[in-house]
Length: 257
View 1 (cartoon, rainbow, N blue to C red):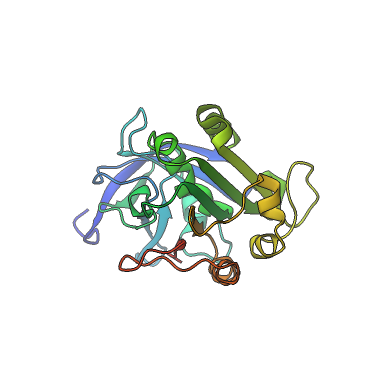
View 2: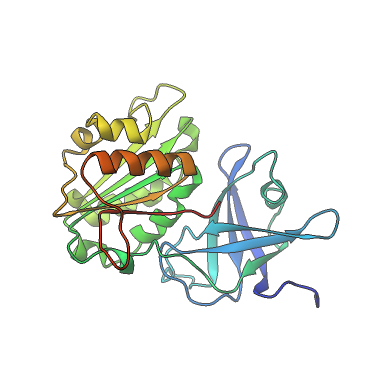
């Protein structure tokens, strides 16, 4: 196509996994540039009016996985009011999809301050994606003494990629803790509630038997903007500071919607 927007390249859907009626993963082959674990790119399609619609999605797989960095996997929820995600949910193997050639994002292992020995990764919904990518990085076991991954969802059937998480547990052993949180139904192996409040009342820390320590802890947040805002406030209340490149702190987030 001669009218493809600058920065997009044509890719092809390799496979699709439907987790729930509106939660799915797409595997895509596309000639993008090398990315770092935790980064995102854009997916794009034309709408019915012929206009291009693009949205940012994180890669779920580590760039050095066995099929190579141009074999991408994305975790997506089809928003009934969305302009793009319902159309992505209609794609199947062999269908074309357009991908941002240049990945973006600063939520990577390279950005974590040197002092950090305990890494916390807090996510809601599909925003677990970049953290799953990071879990595939061999540097984790050398760099961190403790790694906590938190995934908060509304319903238990949205707790996806359990095998990937189990593989990380096997590889990282006692240094890795996974916590699932389900807010809208009871689930035996999950906490209930919301991340900010679970931090403030100490339930999350007690569950993983690890305190947030300004000398050791760094927190990445990825998810809906309300969670990021409220969790940032909770972490500030607990004595942590926002991380800036010019002034290292204790927590950082990625916002791309």
